[in-house]
Amino acid sequence: MNSNSIKNFLFLVVISSFLYSCQSGNGRERLPEAEAEGYKAPVPCVIPSDKLKYYKDNIEDFYQKYLVRSGFNGGILVAKGGCVVYENYHGFFDLRKKDTLNSHSAFHLASISKTFTAMATLKLIQDGKLSLNDSIQKFFPAFPYHGVTVKLLLNHRSGLPNYLYFMQDLGWPQHQYCTNEDVLDYLIKYKPAGTGRPDTHFSYCNTNYSLLGLIIEKVSGMSYEDFLKKTFFIPLGMKDTYVFNMARDSARAMKSYDYRGRMEPYTFLDQGFGDKNVYSTPEDMLKWDQALYTNQIFSKETLEEAYTPYSNERPGIRNYGFGWRMNIFPDGKKVIYHNGWWHGNNTVFIRSIQDSVTIIVLGNKYDRNIYQAKKIAEIFDGGRSISDE
Image 1 (cartoon, helix red, strand yellow):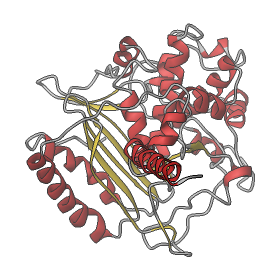
Image 2 (cartoon, helix red, strand yellow):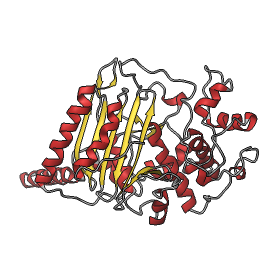
Image 3 (cartoon, helix red, strand yellow):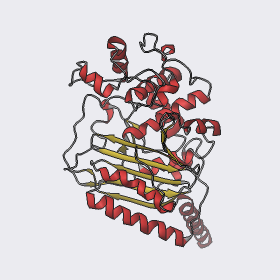
Image 4 (tube, one colour):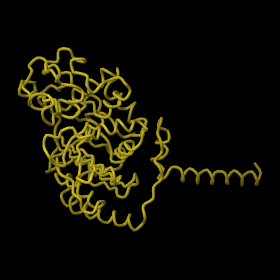
C-alpha cells in the first residue's frame, strides 16, 4: 500500500468513527434501539438552557432532601417531552456485594406491571381478538362468579376477592409457589367471598390482573412473557426489561430489602404474573412512556379508553382507568400514573400528559419517601399537587 492509499484509508477510518459517534450518542443506547424491529427513534427535542437549569436544580433539591437523606437505593429519571432532564442512581444492586446500581439495573416494578398487562389486553381488543364485554366464563367455563367481564377486571370493578389473602386463608402450603392457574383453581373450588356485586364500586384487587394474565395467554396462544416481549419489549428496544420466572431468574434478579437493609425473602406469592413481576429500568420505562404518545402500537381510541375514568360513584379528582390511576383536575388536566409496592420494592411512574412530563422512581429498599416523587410534578406545573392513591 503506497503513502496515498494509507492516507486515504486513515481518512476513512476517522470519518467513519466520527459518524458512528454522532449516531450512537453515548455509544450504548442508539445502536441497540436502531436494531429493534419496528423501533421508531424519538423526535429530537430541545429545552431552553434556562428552563433546563431550573428543572435540574429543583429536581436535585428534591432528590437530596427526600431520597438521599432517607437512604434511597434506586434510580430516578425525569423527562420533559421525551428529553431526559434528570437521571441518577444511588446505592447498590446487591446490598451485600456493594455492586453499584447503573442504568441497566432492572428493578421489580411491582404493581406498575399492571400497566403492561392492561395495555396487552387492550392490544388484543384493538386487534379484534378479544372484547371488553367478554365474560370470564368464555375463557374459563367453570368460573363461578357471574357478571364479571374483561372490562371489570381491567378497571377493578369485578368484586372478586384478592388472592394475596384468600390463598393463605384457604390453606395454600407456604413452601410451595402459587401460580396463576392455582389462583384460578382456588376461585373455582372454594369460591371465596368477594367485595360485592360486579360493577358497583371500585376495589383494587390483584386477582383481576392475575386472571388477565391467563386470558392474554389463552387468546394470544403465547406465554404472557413471550407476548409482552413480542408486542412491547422488542419493538420498543426495551433490552433490560423482562418478566420474572422463579426457576430462571431467582438467582440473578435484583433482590429487595426492608428499611433496615435486611433482604426480603421470596414467598409463595412470587411466581405469579399479570399483577406484578415485570422487571425494568428507568430508561426502558421512558421508552414505554414515549410509545404511549404515538400510534406506534396503539390507536388514539385505545389510549383514550385506557385513560377514561370508570369509577365515578365518589366525587373527587382520583380515579382509575384500564391499568392506570389518574388525577383529573377541574380544568381538564389529567395526570396518569401508577405506584407499586412489593416486598422492599417501591416504585412510581407518573405521566403528566398535557405537560409531557414523565417521572420514574424505582427502588429496591423500602422507602415510603419514594412516593413523594409526585412533588416533582409541581416543578413543571406551578405548584399543582398530585393526590395520593
